[in-house]
Amino acid sequence: MTVEKAVNNFKNLINSSIIEGGNKAKTAMIRSSRPILNIHEAVKYELIKRGIDKELFFPPLNKRALLN
Image (cartoon, rainbow, N blue to C red; front, top):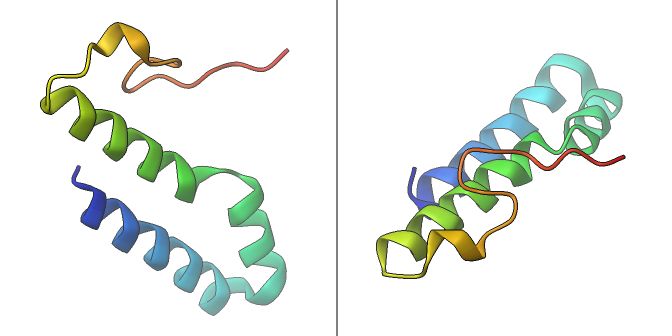
């Protein structure tokens, strides 16, 4: 996913949340971290594509860090 697609996805997730459930749904979507995770993954992908060592990223591409 490109960064542009990730940003559009972010916008669509927030907008659809507002339409479906108003402010409470928007807040829940933001707290879920789903919108921002798309952007994180897209940035990691683009950096790796441009030669940055994938071992430098935590969590790795397509993985989520589990917080204890």
